[in-house]
Amino acid sequence: MPQNDLLGHPNTKAFVTHGGMNGVYEAIYHAVPIVGFPLYGDHYDTFSRVSSKGMAVILNIGKLTPDELYNAVIKVINTPSYKENAKKISAIHKDKPMSAGDTAVFWIEYVIKHGGQHLRAEAFNLSFIEYFQIDIAVSLLVVISVICFVIKKV
Image (cartoon, rainbow, N blue to C red; front, top):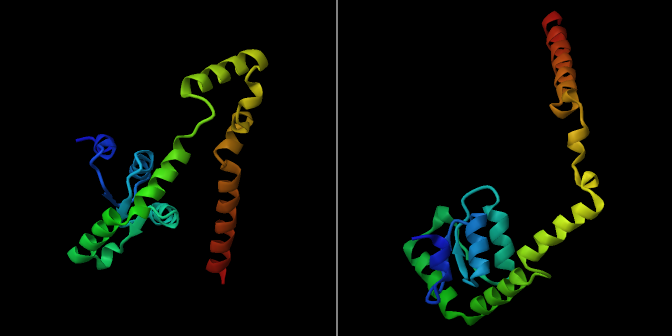
């Protein structure tokens, strides 16, 4: 089943996850507390953020035991503060000044009225050499060649 549909079900009490950003956003959107074990990359930072907001319990996958996982899930389900904090974060996440359609209409009208040249990234104005950093690569190659030459002669 799709993860988003499971998290949106009213009987979902907790979400056990590795901490991928998409799953965390879905859990926040649906106000589902998290039990997680970060594996790599941004997972640690993501979990430290949701944990500091009081909606997640973090576990160490390297030392995880079945009892520890069970206790963490029971803690998240039976402690009302996790659900309350998840609801608060979800409300903040969902609060938008205007709908997506209104935002699209605003930006289309903005570009029609003012043009869009000032919104373009400066990367479009770089030369081929600057964009692909060929000048830096050549400089590094020269430095490495000189160092190798000096080492060889010594």
